[in-house]
Image (tube, rainbow, N blue to C red):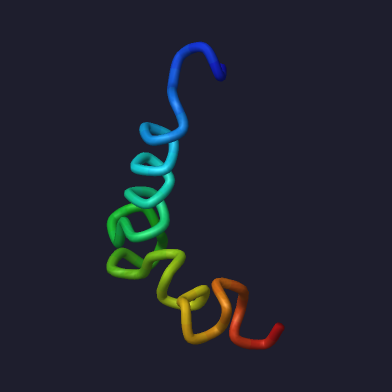
Length: 46
């Protein structure tokens, strides 16, 4: 897969996934909802 995407493209793709609020159930919740910078990008219980 490395030959298909460069690091910058992967970073942009990952950020879009991480912040996308339409991928989760319930809708409106993204990975960042629980795994934000204030939690060190891990879960709030970690």
